[in-house]
Image (tube, rainbow, N blue to C red; front, side, top):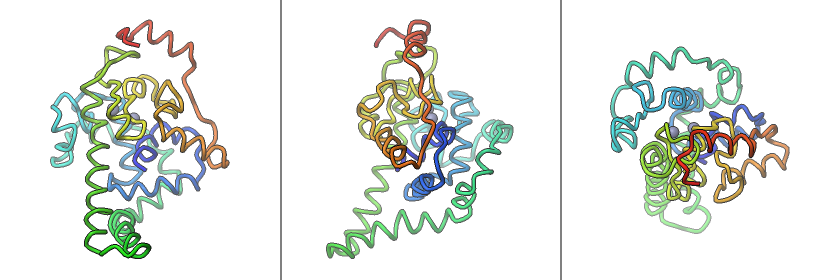
Length: 241
Ligand SMILES: [Zn+2]
Ligand SMILES: [Zn+2]
């Protein structure tokens, strides 16, 4: 679910219905802060990328941008700039408020209790194996893959859309983070719900949102147009694609 939780930044703007946001509530299964805090930090990340106001500033190195930023207090610029951002749209959303209010209990349930109980309950797995594999191992792997978007995808890869920014296209991160590795594109066109020029290709997050649209639970998917993309590539791209 990370991708859905992650891209709430651009995708909240896409007219997602509360029922669909309910899926995002399950971002609790990843313990990545509640929707409100995550989205505010992510907006700061986009607006002040690679500066001290970026919560996981990749200029401070791979370790810091991957996991180190979670071990230290936020830089005062992150707090200051975060305060100045307009987050009224987030606070106006009842699902965001609900998830923030019950965040801790949803984490305990969705990250630890439910993943442990499902294999035990439905196919007789032992509780210890369920706990260590379905909860702890799943959690560890998905967190690290998620963090690669902030670390590896800000350091390694090509920049076909904007060579003047650090975020890059990283196919390995795309595979691991189910469509999140088109990061040069995502930072160049942050409003694009697909977070990639290629739509459905290697992008299960896009499949998911399209499916939700088909069900009527999401509307108004925003995309960058082909001419917009080509013009930007010609103007600021590194010529690699
Ligand atoms: Zn983003
Ligand atoms: Zn980024």
